[in-house]
Length: 418
Image (cartoon, rainbow, N blue to C red; front, side):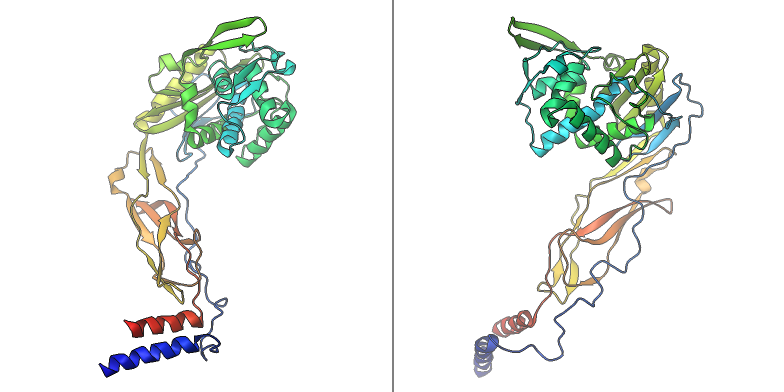
């Protein structure tokens, strides 16, 4: 009884002395010379997104001189033929236009219900169009349908002006975005693909890169690219009239797993296609450039997709399991939580048993405070047949500050009161 009372009196005395008490001799409150949390470990291995130069096209017969087949979630190139040959893209240009539209939607710069006015410049577009008239108002949602389904050049220009103020400024943003995606052999002169000059060009590889960015980051694009036919209403000074949008992507009727994406053709570009499909939860992108006629581009795409699905298996880990906490030395808390940076995907084309994939957690036993939420703590390593097939970073899920002398004193006080 007296001992317990003595401990309480000591705790009260310590609280009274807390303000103004000098630092405890021998305790270094500055941890800047300590090894930062998470450093000192092995360098990062390859990430979950893997890329390959591709094995060429042995045993796969297509007519197009330039083509590429890619798995979307990993970016793995399964097959390619002259994938870096510079080509005119025609309306495949609109993939980048659609990407910038969806990014503007994500940022909240525009909304699907916003109304877009057609300018005289937009109305003047030739080629594939939906016959918008100057001053005509259509929602962003309808304009996207006009671009994705019917490849409307007039709708593409109207949206470019709506987002950037002018087509020229929008095209500048397209080229900037292309550089950001690593599209090294691409340059745009317009937002719809009508330009047939040598300064408007791309490659099969670059088309695959922007297609991948669109479908993986903005899967809502499928709500538009899977439309076969749909009516829109023109409201002009002459009154209202219906106009039927008809998809230019005939694979929607010819290949049951088709999800998109975009066709293109001009006299210079010949016939182009970026075809996307989903089968067994695997998303493939087949890019066909400079095909000799409109039927060949679809036939070649089907050949590529069928081959891809015949050899591909996808391992996917969403990383939803709970990770253990890691001990923190010198912190105001004794441990910090961990979280995965993201999911992991691996494409196998060699017939391996993906049930044999091993997942190994690699984090230190302890770290030195402070640690910050979102900083790298370690990684999980995926191995198959004794080889590393990818990694995903493990991050701290909350911050832990370094403890000061007052924090240590309070810990002593609370221990005495228990």
